[in-house]
Amino acid sequence: MIPKSFLSLNVMVSYAMRRTAWANRRCNPRHIRCASTFSVPFTADRYSIKRGSYEKINDQDLAKFRQILGSDNVITSDDDLERYNVDWLNICRGQSKVVLRPKDTQQVSAIMKHCNERSLAVCPQGGNTGLVGGSVPVFDEVVISMGLMNKIISLDKISGVAVAQAGTVLETLENHAMENDRIVPLDLGAKGSCHIGGNVATNAGGLRFLRYGSLHANVLGLEVVLADGTILPFGTNMRKDNTGYHLHHLFIGSEGSLGIITQVALLCPPRPTSVSLCLLGLNSFEDVLQCYQQAGSRLTDIMSAFEFLDTQCFAVSCEEHNVPAPLKEFPFYAIIEVSGWQPEADSTRLNELLEDLMGNGLVADGIVTDEPSRMQTVWKIREGVAEASARRGYCYKYDLSIPKQQMYQLVQDMKERLGSKVIFSAGYGHLGDNNLHLNIIAADYTPEVAKAIEPFVFEWTREKKGSISAEHGLGFKKRNAIHYSQSPAAVSVMKKMKQLFDPKGILNPYKVLPDDGCILGHE
Ligand code: FAD
Ligand code: 2HG
Ligand code: ZN
Image (cartoon, rainbow, N blue to C red; front, side):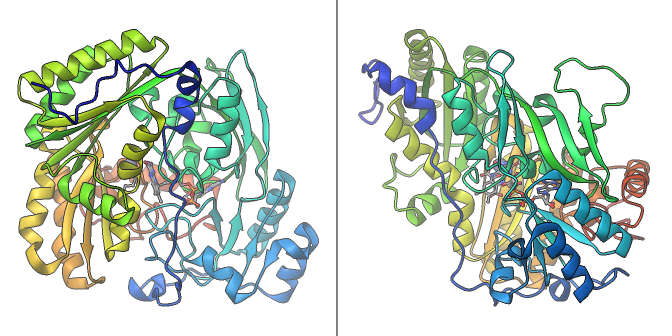
């Protein structure tokens, strides 16, 4: 017997609605910040960091920057600097005295040439939505903010290759792609603010990873400015290109430490014309896994997302975003999205699967819909978890790859380990990609809680042969944990690469690579 909340997809929707379905399917939670960020402690103080031996900005440097960019795009007032110094989570705070806003690649090159000659450290910044403290300075690095480099240069209607400046906001690129019956192969909750250059620099994963794979598969070429100001095109924008080493891949996920990405060529797949999803209530994580297995085998060609949330994440997001919960309380929730070009056939397959899942008791309750506003509500709950959780207190945030069967055990173990020391420990994420987001919310940062979490969480993940950063990168916060996922030999090669591309170490220092002498996590 199908419960009342289970709506049938056989309800007809107009063709016009179907056409707009993909456009409207996601909410866009632009990030909000606390009224004041001045209470956020300096990163350098909180984590006792020693400043590198870089030069300090002087009046001649500022005059040079004004000559390159014009006065308006050299920001030096304390009030204006604040938002570039503090990260989205309000956890990391730098002390930069100058933000530069270049408009084109030549300006980026001139800035880098000067900074390299003068040994001035720089911090490249996109939309500043990164979650590992990589996008903000630690000390007085020069912030190079890419927001004015926001032109979409071309979109080839036949091949689907889009070329855009790095500062193009992801959502703007997505809207442009959709006008041309294409989509960007990447979607994430921060899309209203993050830049395509920032996405490439972090190798962002997100909600479409399951269908379209990593940016390594979809970025065909990059234009990059190296530390000394050299402008280099990498890749050919051709899908097949085996001419030597595939250098552009080095910059995908390099988090601003090897060069500044100024332009991106991205393969944009055709835009699906029919989208539908279901939100399911489940009684155990084992049921979520069973459900994934069945959906994977029966909907494999049309499944575009499989996400899960635990009851805590679901409730916090509904409450903080004032969304009436579409389902009553369950220990777990799953979201399955299908998208394709055969609305009737796709709907029938989804409906049949769900009827079977309910029939065999794996799913306790659910809704299924292809109505844009209802889909948007479900995505709002899912995409809103990060922001909702962060509003509840200090967020100890972990982004892990773990084999599916063991994924939720970590959340259970953390709950037991931390007990009432924290407000809550909760888990959700991209189940289809083995990616768990573990958020531990406490009243404030304390070394005691930090020590109870780390290195336990990293050791736990290594024991399961997972990764300590599935998609957010290492940035500032996770750099010294790199050894939990990479061998000393691999880290040594990375350091050599860094030396090759950035001999003076001016590009995003204190990020990605571990501190000298750090062998934390190495057995
Ligand atoms: P920033 O935050 O400004 O920078 C991130 C890093 O890239 C920094 O190290 C910076 O130095 C570097 N960088 C930025 N631009 C350039 C450039 N042009 N050249 C060289 N280096 C550069 N991530 C995921 O993977 N999946 C998700 O689903 C996801 N969801 C999110 C949801 C929310 C609500 C938020 C706030 C964040 C989310 N993130 C997610 C984190 C994420 O990494 C990004 O939002 C995004 O990829 C960062 O882009 P950005 O332009 O904001 O870069
Ligand atoms: C998401 O999938 C983002 O929503 C943020 O990657 C995850 O809360 C987080 O850490
Ligand atoms: Zn994520």
